[in-house]
Image (cartoon, rainbow, N blue to C red):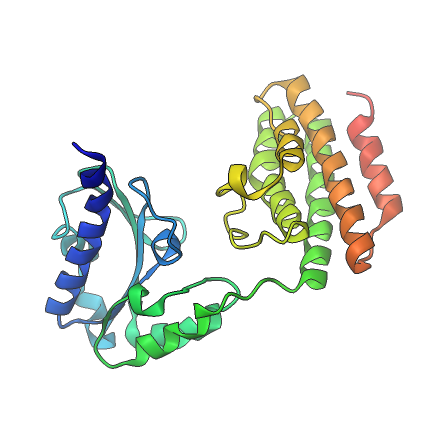
Length: 276
């Protein structure tokens, strides 16, 4: 199979989704989001879309049956966020929000600052009334996060969660500490790092394109916060993580004059560096 055919397959599936949506009168609108709408999609990307179903047809709309017309499904389930997740026969993933059109389309303008739709006309696959196209124009303008309140929120959260990490480690729960370090603390560190580096386009999934978006020094600091789920490795990573959090917090305080609870920070350091 050629490189061109691999790359065109996802585009063909989106074209097929557009066609199916237009032929199903229960759908009022379909809106793509994610990598397809910001020009970052490739052969490994998911298809992510909102299916805006006419309110009186929501109960009888069978999402998996509709999506199986795109390609055979190997998996269909509702994920932890209440979103219909599917896996097609070629291993392409899809996430689809089955949303009532009335209130759902009205929510789209409120996404500004969270979701970016730089080309709304390309993101809208179906719009029977014109409401969706109009609504999608609001998130077309990228709105970076407000730096002062965002930095304060992130530094406070890093303080809170790292204290929890210290308590968990003191209890000897290494697996739990490992999970906390990598799934809770690290994303907030990367969000704060991105804020400081003026690289917030991927702030909702801050590890995305990290290798491209952040300088070598930050990537190295991030790497020092990772570990296998072994006692001493996790403890070392936790100390490295907290040092990086404090360095990022200090940089944010210098730039935006946010408040840092220095005494509390020192006590957390003592906990992490204390007897094991």
